[in-house]
Amino acid sequence: MSLSQIARSVCPSPTLALNEKAAILREKGDPVIHLGGGEPKSKAPIDALLAASAHLNSGEIRYAPADGIPALKKAVIRYTEEHYHRTVAPENIICSGGAKQAIMVALQAILNPQEEVLFPAPYWVSYPEMAKLCGANGIPVYSEDGSFIPRIKDIEQRVGPYTKAIIINSPNNPSGVMYPESFIADIIDFCERRDIYLIMDDIYHRLVFDNKKAISCFDYAKDFSENSKLIVINGISKVYAMTGFRIGWAIGNKKLIEAMTNIQGHQTSGPSVLLQKAAVGALNGVQSCIDSLRVTLENNRNVLVDRLNAFKGVHVTKPDGTFYCFADFSAYEKNSHKLSNLLIDKVMVLTMPGIEFGMEGYLRISFCGSIKDITEGIERIKWVLDPESPNELYIGDRKLVRDWI
Image (tube, rainbow, N blue to C red; front, side, top):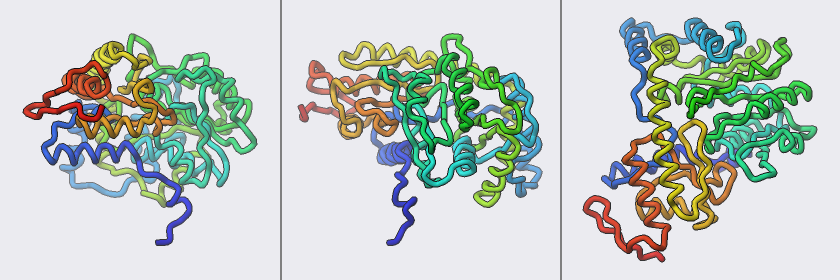
């Protein structure tokens, strides 16, 4: 079969593949524990459901404008004023089918073939593939000190004549770290001076722990003209636990948003008007659901980190936010795919291989499930890897024997 060069170069999404594998195992009745997912288990906010229901009952489910309905743009403006301390115009906003599409359309609007987009490692699995879809190159930037926190020096050393954009995701998927204010200030200043697009992927910005506050990039920006190359990405998937609703948005200069709207108009048209109404309900409704989710996640994080710290040989950086922990298992197995597959095959625990995020020897472990899943999942992992574990393990009525060591 003859496929395009881009089609041949793009890899399937490992996170979606893992979700599919978990679903297949559960369908078979296997007692699988999914510690690899990125989907909060709490319900969508009632205000979102009521807004969608009211619009559904109207029967007026029609095409939406390519850049989003006015009601959602108005809600995004209010949200941006409250959480970013910045007033933007409707012409500065495009609403998309999730934050992922907003990033994708932004990259399509700014990247030419062979140009480069940089992002600190570890990074979200889709960034390199999105660059490929534009015929461009995704360039990971590794911290010289080996930490999860980049320095402006690390970025500067990788910027070259083909660098067109930088993506910053903080709090970060997969590590959960929140980049320091000093770095955010430095990267904004650097991009303004070098005339480089800066895409702030803020999808986790309200899921921050230990009484910390997310950083508003607008607090450090100096260029608010229509030449500004700052792009802010957000959405309802994570903080409102509305992953299946697929509504996100981008904020940028008017010319860029116009170009993104033209692309999206030919690509998918506007997002579903029904789901946009649900997003309006979530953004304008009672916000206690976010506080409740954050408290639950912080407690889950503490349990997970405590369990991992008691696991000899595992190195853990305590997450500042999100619902992921990026743990170093290289003392047991340096090949993260091999390790992840071992855990699936032997004890039906699903984790994400670290190499998918640009760092080998790590596993991304999600703590957005139940405490029971976290504690039992880590217990199963420890049984597989720790040579001092007993020879047998019971999972329900199943008796497992360590026959691979």
